[in-house]
Amino acid sequence: MLFVVLIFIPVLAAIAAAAITSNALRPWIMVIAGSLHFAVMLAILIFQPAPIWDGWVGLDPPGKLVLLLISTLFLLCSIYTVGYLRYRGERSNRVLIPCLSIFLAGASLVACSQQLGLMWIAMETTALSTAPMIYFNRTPRSIEATWKYLLLSSVGIALALLGSFFLVCATLKHDPYPSLLFSHLVRHAGTANAIWLKMAFVLLLVGYGTKMGLAPMHTWKPDAYGEAPGVVGALLAGGLTSCAFLAILRVDRVCIAGGLQTYTSHLLIGMGLLSMAVAAVFMLGQKDIKRMLAYSSVEQMGILALGAGIGGPALYGALLQMINNGLTKGMLFLSAGNIHRSYGSKNTDEVHGAMRRLPLSGTIFMLGFLAITGSPPFGPFISVFTILNAAFSRHFFVIGAVFLLLLLMVFMGMGRTVLVAVLGKPLPRKRPMNAYRDGWMTGLPLVVSFLLVLMLGVHIPPFLTHMLQQARKFMEVRP
Image (cartoon, rainbow, N blue to C red):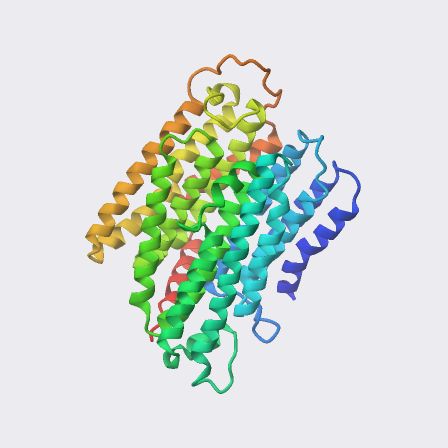
């Protein structure tokens, strides 16, 4: 029953938001839905109800982590959205709010899906609900970003569907009662056709890797993140990518059970390093702060893939990094949205001295940069160090050295853009800046996100450590 409530709360919120005619009242539906969803999520994690619908819907250990992240991030974003939309009275939010709610429903279903086809449907739901949100500003560049996102996402989800067919075909010969349940696929992976399994993993990695934003399937990210409102960027970078990573982990587990751990490991490590390298190159000299965050997201997805590919303690670090990235990207995109609103620009040719003009948002943006690049004492430092330590302890010395070099390049490229934006004095402008200043509803989510990221760098709560260890053990199946 709790799973049904969890998924249908945002669906009912979307219906209610579409029916309400008041732009001012509609965002509060999102806050109510986010709060109820968070409460039900906690109840599920505490009471651990049994799977429903013949095992199609339930929670595995990695799914618990993704659900916790999505629900927390959405609640923070819902509070921010109320304050943000007060400054966007010229634009109707009758499409935005229902789409945000449907996104939450789709992402929750991804986390709870224990059936291959249902997970694919849930991922497609998140894609379809995201496209109208990217077009919220209704500019020529936003419509271009929307079409690019739809085109690449459609190709990616189609490849994922084809990969799902291949995965099932791999087990048909020796499986008298075929099923799309992940538990069933894992049990029968040992007798599966290795060639079909390899092809399935490649297709699913490319398909869901497109949603995740791994290079070279990342090309939708700079445009979509750059043109979408900050709250949408936060949910894309912290929510959608985590769902896609979860999908890849589940498929990887099936392949590992089929004896293909070395094969999948090499692919994940290769795509991880490639994503980090691409992000590092394109981040150098980047003047658009939102596009910079998009390339930072590409880099972070590379780190997750690298940690999953190395395995062992590195997988623990990758799962922790997924949590850290989601929370840190939340504070970065929301603070970048505030800066954009105040300056009327997101280009460092015009954005200077943000810490003076917007003390809270400018400071949080600066601290978020330090956190996401792996600086102590923030959470990402712990997770990145865990992955790096695992790489060297498993004798991946070249991979570890390249990893360190790419981290340095990202720090330098990102730092150049961030320091220009937040330090110094605001430049004289030909047109007046917006009267926007930090308010409590657009500032509180930033502070809470920052405190959570700081806490994860100083002390990881025992319940989260337990969840991470469970997820790591869950992935360590034996063929």
